[in-house]
Image (cartoon, rainbow over all chains, first blue to last red):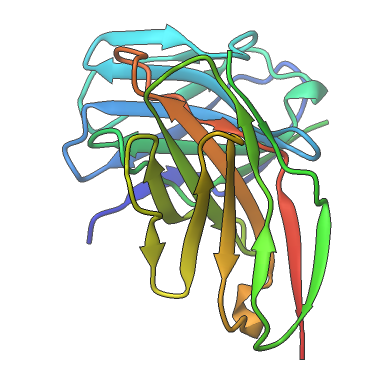
Length: 111
Length: 117
């Protein structure tokens, strides 16, 4: 089954404790992206990647890092999480302009 | 820069009625795509329908159709014969085709649709 997977789905952590949210797609898509969703703001792009070893910032990259060492994986790294990074995070991949496939979301709470 | 405006924070509709969710957009790009996504209470983002700016006909996918009025910069989603399972948050989004490499979607703030039995 073609899909985008994210782990963990839910995470409660404390300020400053490094964490990684994994994202994997099995559709051989070159393009992958991370968004965060906050009430009243819709979804905003954090980082994106056009291909292996090619990444760039989106609209809200502060406090996040990414890497793209393999085509299928695009982890989101929070080196020192803060409460304002409490959000719902989505990974997405795309084969082209018509469709983006979203993962199931990761609900992160930073205390 | 692109901007999506969804002016209806919430809507209540009787089951089996048709419903129109409003979306207006602002862009200086000539070629772009418009998308609608559904987000049920479980949280996942479900792609519903796509409209290209140069498509001559309005897009349709089953009970979903997109009322695209390019001159007005509007891309309203129409759901025919609404069902209880249509209760969800709905997001309008767009992406300019000229952004080489970044397929970033710009989202509106969403409309929460509730279907009443």
